[in-house]
Amino acid sequence: MKNVFNFSAGPAMLPAAVMAQAQQEFINWRDSGCSVMEVSHRGADFIEIAAQAEQDLRDLMNVPENFKVLFLQGGGRGQFAAVPLNISTQDDTSLHLVSGSWSKGAVAEAAKYNNAKVIGEVTEHNGFQYMAKPAAADIDQSAAYLHFCPNETVDGIAFDWLPEAGDVPLVADMSSNILSRPVDVSKYGIIYAGAQKNIGPSGLSVVIVREDLVGKARQSTPSIFDYELMAKNDSMYNTPPTFSWYLAGLVFKWLKAQGGVEAMASLNQHKADTLYKAIDESSFYRNNVHPENRSIMNVPFHLADPALDKVFLEKSKEAGLLALKGHRSVGGMRASIYNAMSIDGVEALVSFMKDFEEKHA
Ligand SMILES: *Cc1c(COP(=O)(O)O)cnc(C)c1O
Image 1 (cartoon, rainbow, N blue to C red):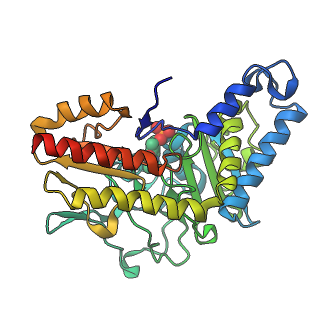
Image 2 (cartoon, protein in one colour; image 1 turned 180 degrees about the horizontal axis):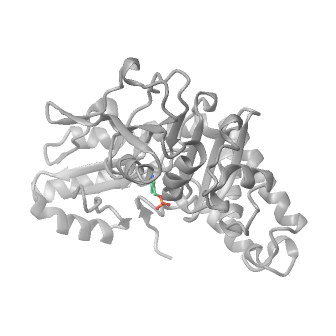
């Protein structure tokens, strides 16, 4: 098999050790003669790994007792609808920070179900994209919740401050940075993530929701999105995405073996620093995000001469560096360097970029 480094934004690479284990168990899981995807979700074996996955995630993120952890379907976008349906009425206001395209998408979806109001947006700051923290006075205390995305996958814009929202529950879309660094879960109302960036296969969404926000779903909420119904049924009101759940469990075990989220955070910072340094030291490449808002998971960059984009992508692919094309809305390149990407991958990319610059500058 070809040795490659896969920089896909999502679905993204998974840890090689996890993929090897899944392969080994694929057709004979726990010596049952069956695949994990061929057995009942109600069977003792599956229930055990499902519960273990939840416990491992709780351990990794230090999830307090008064939070439910749900394994649902519908990815990240499913929660764009599930959140307003579960914790707001038609007449409620939801507040939104728009730091990039995903949080913008969340506003549009919420607007179908409540009065969605944008209270902060990315601005241009000396040619850099900057996300300012909203003033506490701008946060309407009667709002049902405040939604934001701390890591914008497409735009490479991130922030690690929390809005000072008082009693207004904070709802964070952590699809592309969950488990990449420690977070204090107790400060949030809801954290959700589509799995395909940092957890496992697409389709699954992990939802961590504070108990007092469970049980408020409006009557019209689809049952499979109803947090209370799902929590009561251990996320098995309908058939869960069993294979994705199993694989997520393997990833959680792998993360624990790596030293957990703290260890990942320092490795992730090191990877990101290595790549941004290479970009900043060259006039051939540039990144337009304010240094305070640079994502350590998704690193977009442009070539000074966009006419070279095509050849950059061809040559990088030949060199085994895959999926570097930027999102169509941003253009240029993007390297997604989630937990599963090794420092070796980042170093290989940096070295390729230097060679490419020497040949084409
Ligand atoms: C990928 C992504 C989504 C969308 O996830 P789907 O599973 O495709 O619905 C939402 N938010 C963020 C931040 C993402 O990175």
